[in-house]
Amino acid sequence: MEQDGNILREMRELETDLCWRAVEERDARFDRIFFYGVRSTLVYCKPTCPSRRPRREQVSFFASPDAAEGAGFRACLRCRPRETGARDPRVELVLRACRAIEAHEDGAPSLEELGAELGVRPHKLQRTFKSVTGITPRQYAAAHRLKLFKSRIREGDGVTSAMYEAGYGSSSRLYERASEKLGMTPATYRRGGKGMNINYTIVASDMGRLLVAATERGVCSVQFGDGDEELAAALAAEYPSAAISRDETGLGELIETLLRHVAGDQTELSLPLDLRATAFRSRVWEELRRIPYGETRSYGDVARAIGQPTAVRAVASACAANPVALVTPCHRVVREGGEPGGYRWGLARKRELLRRERDAASVEAESVALAEG
Image 1 (spheres, helix red, strand yellow):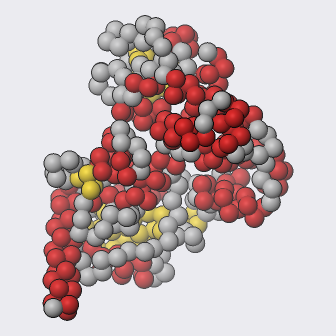
Image 2 (tube, helix red, strand yellow):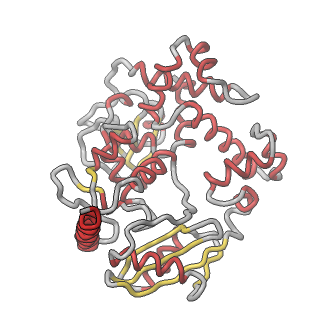
Image 3 (cartoon, rainbow, N blue to C red):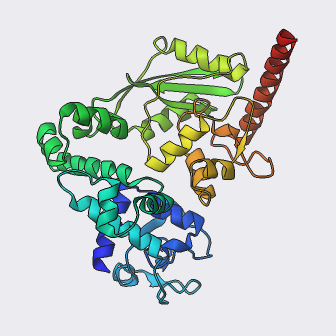
């Protein structure tokens, strides 16, 4: 059990929303795999506990009831986490696969090699691993390597030393892969994000104040709000170690593009992005950008499209965490019955955006029909 607990801790470091997603979905596959404690009540539960879901910042995860009680939590009287039962064999397989991947210090094993080592067909391993974690074994291996690199950097190693210790064969490969996940170059990460430059501006739109922020790599924040101070404070909280400057002229082209999009005069958006997110959220946001202008999808539709049909609440959480309004069109995701659901920047704005998109798409379709007729 302790060995499995170690693997679980590694998984949480790599895919930090995995256990929380299981709590959000009350995923029975994770019962007896981990337990969560709520710091405000000092009670610990199974992932399937029917009690009111706590806030994420109040939750700690444990590999066993003993670990939770050793940390000062008491067992929940509703879900009775100490009751024994069989662990899900699919999750057990994934834990074994994680252990095997991490043991290969000379590089990630192929899917065939991993399957042979675990005694399971590669296709079944791939399907099971992705259904449990939301990522493939190959993506897990890449995340593990990046974790090692970050760990070495935090311990004071230079970038080159940390690169080879983590198993990167060349600096170009490190910068190609790692900077995508870090949201900055490895050298910048070593300095705790200091030196990362973000320029932003805030302008008036007919939906309130609009903040647009970008690094040299792309847009990192697009936010609606009611006041400049509120928007600037939110940006600073999101990037506490970056050098943030207001720029009233350099982002003019981005602003014009977004304002045309808000007005319905430009239906397509294709802007470079500089975003940091877990693998799951990245997949959700990518899927949102595939939703055609003027159309909507339900949270369930998105969950099915990314191969995670039970992850409806986690999809909703990813939508709520979207940092770039409009560019990643989370406003196009609605409830199963067609009701708008929530929106980070206010339900009224969501309804208005959807109305404008429907109207603009209808006009565009009529124009095309007349031209073809």
